[in-house]
Image (cartoon, rainbow, N blue to C red; front, side, top):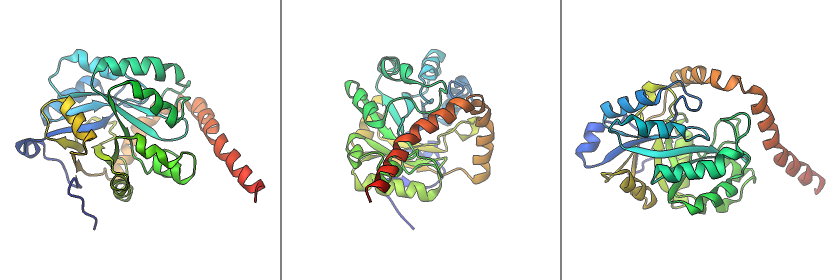
Length: 288
């Protein structure tokens, strides 16, 4: 078994967490503003009932956060976005203000989106991290060890020499419990965070309403600003469990209709993403 004092693989109990003086927040959740059927209002109402905070992190999109702010439901709301980089990684950005999130989105993300809005944008990871430097925000790599057969994790990209290892020094934290990952992937992410002295976060990567709150990031905080400060200072505790395989299949089925209408743009983006890796492989073979 592997043990980490700040990473706990068990079902969160928000009341107990709050009794300890900690604020629990699900830092990775999607709504119908990207590839989820979940309404923003429903997510906020459930978060309020559970007594947790919420980061709406739609793919390459910020409109869900704008809607959440208009709802007026009293929930600690972290302005967030999940940006799919052209070279593979999925970057979670958490902003101290909605205004900064919207400015970052409009200036750097919106105009670089492809026709498939949920797939990779036309910027590589270093470019995206360069552009976030002008903002007060926290940069976290989602599911850093990637999905099976897909180049969607910084660890996998570094191992494949698509990205230099110096990318770790430009991040504030790694997502060490992702509800959509296997336990082995999350444990590997925890080891990476420790090796690179990075903060730890967790979130469900949920798309269905019942998934909300299955993984939470906790800190001695009363406000969103204090929570983000705690991530930067590596003072968080992450509590949660991965979804069973059956639930992952249910979520995949629910999400599929949101992607299938963009099949051609998605395949085109996958091909464009593969070209640098193919070119590198050919060069290596020729130089042998």
